[in-house]
Image 1: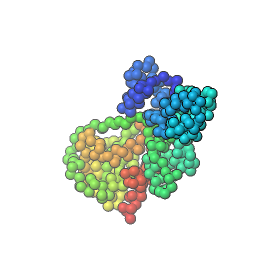
Image 2 (image 1 turned 90 degrees about the horizontal axis):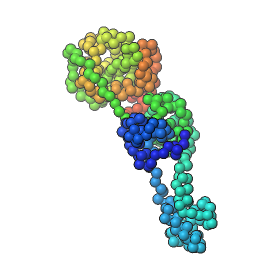
Image 3 (image 1 turned 90 degrees about the vertical axis):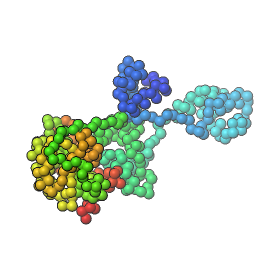
Image 4 (image 1 turned 180 degrees about the vertical axis):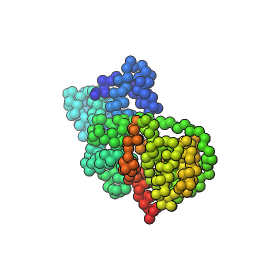
Length: 382
């Protein structure tokens, strides 16, 4: 695709990207720009991977148009290259190179030379991954293991702290995946990202609705302070992840280490969910059984039975307050990489869920200083 054939003024392109960053759809942007169809906007956005290109600027040391006009007048007046350079306070080699690459003294024209210089600046520059084969291989390897670009970047800094050639920002990895012209990472690797997106989209989110009242609930405000500051392990957050045909799995996340457990639940009724949770929690060492925080879903109506079976007190979040279980909400988002919406979760065995939990627990986390949840929990238990 040649984007130069898509006729947008500089002002229109600036408006296009501003609207895109604000979360507007391609169709809405096209209408705002008075385009009859959305293909032009779609092509520009897709070509840049949904990432607004940086505004182009001339380098400080580059020749300006007025300097090129002085060169043209100097040539017409019969001045030498050194004389022209002296008048511009430029190096003679700079002026000589400028004249030579634009047809020599007989053909030099200031406007044409300035336009060609601007066009030459569009040549793609090799990105970091294109220049460093081992770094490219490491990044591709971790992407294939479904690590996020941010996790890869943090891991590289820890693994190669003194080798700058083996470090890269997560933003550079995203750009290498999304921007077609770079072509240094296979496009198929975008499918390994959590969202599996082919381009960047504006951020947004939806909060859950409350699920009604549960008898004898203990509010999250009564949860021990040690659970709030994450200093002591053994405090968990839980929720149900929903799939197709009203199927579910239970997710438990330990607040200190972000260690995750996935639990198969055949049905959503409270007896089934409480029994499945209690069975798994009872297997934990006593120091990891302190509290459980849940939303106000009816599946935990039998929370008293859970506490009797496990000696773990259940605390309930306020309605429509998913941030009060932030670790669990974040983990559920990560799990959508493995269980996309529309997946029939009833077909998954507990052994498979254990495998996915292990993979998640062996991925480095930014919030843990790029340690893995498994490593952080291992320290606690030893």
